[in-house]
View 1 (tube, helix red, strand yellow):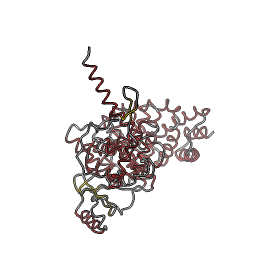
View 2 (cartoon, one colour):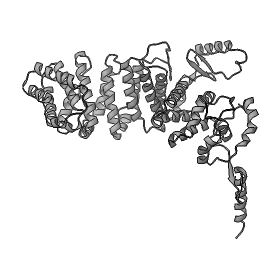
View 3 (cartoon, one colour):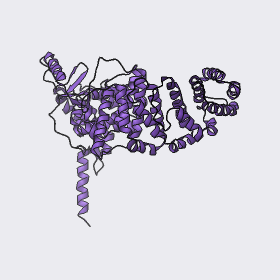
View 4 (cartoon, helix red, strand yellow):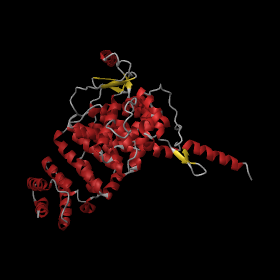
Length: 520
């Protein structure tokens, strides 16, 4: 009945009456996402009638009411087939300021029309394959980038940027060709990175370092939403960027990684929004070539160096010999480097573990990121080793028992999800410099058996990657307890069927094999 009344007014009424009836319809169905199939034909005709109104010279408020109803109706995939035409798409592009012109965004009164048009396009493109094909034909991605450039340095049009970016994300998600176009033809990587810089109000202090105000206000809800959409779009643009081929690529990825470092060190308006922001930053960092992740850490400034020295001076004398890791004014310091961003990633990882669910989607990206950072960058690995695997003092409890980060990760080594189990074990293995004896010390043989079997290291040894030699970190507690560990050994069967330590069993089979090769 609502559709029938609205359709009658849209077809025959004047602009004021159309605006009123559509505003009533919008208010009533704002939260409607499922529609009655019996009224499907009426909704199709209402959509067609709205498009006819939109090409007329009607007031802005009437255009907004038309677009609001169109956005609601476009949630229904079934009605989009007859209304998704090239002509109708071009009407929405014109209203969204995506047509071929150099119009600037000066008329504030037009902003609601632009925003509602972009919202309609998001729904229509997401729900209609025909609209997706028309988007390619109309070169929609290029038009969206042009609109973003108009918005780039404007502070009061975040809604326009937000839905422009959301539509760009959808297009790059649905079409792999658009990802390539965005990356190379449209220069999407620097453009979207600049959008992030604007959202975070970044002030650069060096080529890859930004000023962080720990006492500054959180991001506004609009700035946070805009940043999240930009991060998602950038993820699609860079999803295949595992290798850097040109110096300009390396520079651009380092700039983006520096912006993401800044992102990790700021907060959104709520705890949930902060987590969503950081989660998308983690996902994007996973696309950055690992050689460019060195910008996640940076040398201390003169002020930070002075603060660190003051902090260490204040420590009791029996603590000043510990490695120069100190927490001062929210700054994590290791070996003269600012490790704040890595500490945020570690805290983020622990929160995801504590959630106890959705490990594959929520935990594995940050674990994989920390693993690759640790493998490629020595300072990051050593800092994380200090945080995750500090010198072992508790030798009475099993490694998986307790509430430390180490205990939590060790428990994951026997998780039912193979992917989660593998990446947790790999992270700890890398922190141990891929040395089997070190891994066993911190995790126990039973927990590590899966990884060692997969690597062919059940008899001991180390992985394929090279790591620098560090000083011995065995505590007195561990040295005293180490002989008792001999109570649990990997065992194997000798040729005569008796059980013996695995190393001895393997050596006996080697002897038999050599003897056999000497006979006919």
